Image 1 (cartoon, rainbow, N blue to C red):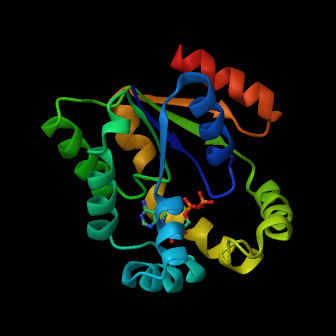
Image 2 (image 1 turned 90 degrees about the vertical axis):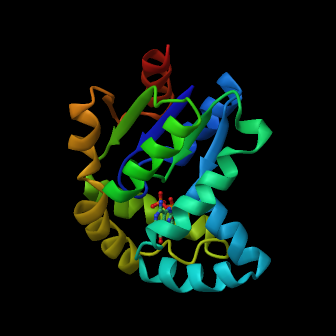
Length: 188
Ligand code: ADP
């Protein structure tokens, strides 16, 4: 099973991904978490990532695609994965299609978690208060930039997946439990 969780920053992708990991035994591949591990490890990639992430910009497609592709080859991904935060550009989506095709796999569902953007600021502020040490990109200024980047680079993926008949949407403003059951229904 290959699932893509899709939505604006702060929409709740990570929360829903964790539920699916527990319920379906899938592996969560979060490109953001992979980058945060690189930052924590102090690697060269991490140093570059921190600067870009703190600005609210995107890492280069090439780096992200290489990172995800390598991770997909790990044995723990054989049963399926939840992609969280990737793809984030049409170029990444095309690279993902090629990657999966080469492995004889295909995307099962793309689930868009729809949220009201005003609510995102409140969520991010709460999250920032809880995780300021861990996520220096959780603040209102960076969120504004991340939302602009989302509209410009990531939202075009919606029609990309819609024409392929893969796109399903859930109401991300509903309580976490309701979002989770809607997602579970789609995943079947
Ligand atoms: P969000 O809370 O917005 O879902 P993520 O943890 O997925 O945040 O990503 C945080 C940051 O990491 C992004 O703002 C971006 O700088 C970088 N990043 C994560 N995934 C990608 C990607 N697929 N392509 C480019 N940059 C990425």
